[in-house]
Length: 295
Image (cartoon, rainbow, N blue to C red):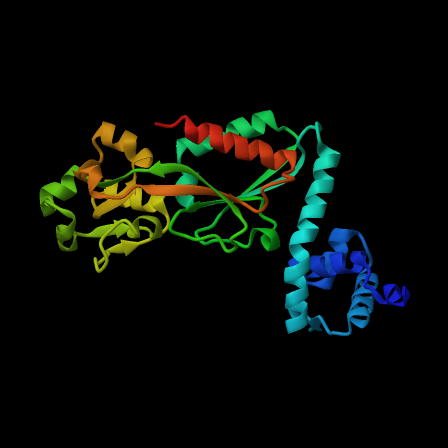
């Protein structure tokens, strides 16, 4: 009746297998878990023996999952995340947030004053948290990338349906150019006439414009687009919060009414609805408070 229990794989070995996949190698997983590489390798072999299937194809530089390994990772990853997160939450409950918090944001948001102010406030309130901010324009596998939070424009879908998604804000866009550029090249009356001008655009605002337009410059560096527009190199569609001062100072002029373009929705994404570490919960709450106060 109980014989089969001896052949069941160790949950510790399954956890090590998940770590190897996430860290993309046995050596990296061994370093993360504080074990010797040979011990991790041996326990993986024991797990494969217990299951009766090869899980990993080992090469000198990397690992690849077999079909059975891919299936096991999909089955085990989420429950292990929940158990680890729950344990961390219980350990850290009512404890000062600490550790490393990794946040992925689009460059468009990173250059705004509102985001800079938010980060400054987070650092002041969470002095024992090391903050790492990465700029990404594509959706990430947050668990495998060890990213705690990601900010994405709404037209980019998260990689996994179980990620929590919360809309933060709708960012209006302005079509702008320098007074000198408009004086030399004229002024478009509507969006369809933009093909007659040097158009400067990014991946974010390209989705807000009609398809088929020709671009003089296409770049995700909004700071570059802003500088080129000010220097008279073309017409740019930029987040209104980024160029408000330029408009007040007169270095940029709005070319078309803002209602000509759809607002860009920014979404906050994180992996789990429960068991958030305090360092992550603090950042989520700060995002919500900051963007809910914006007009």
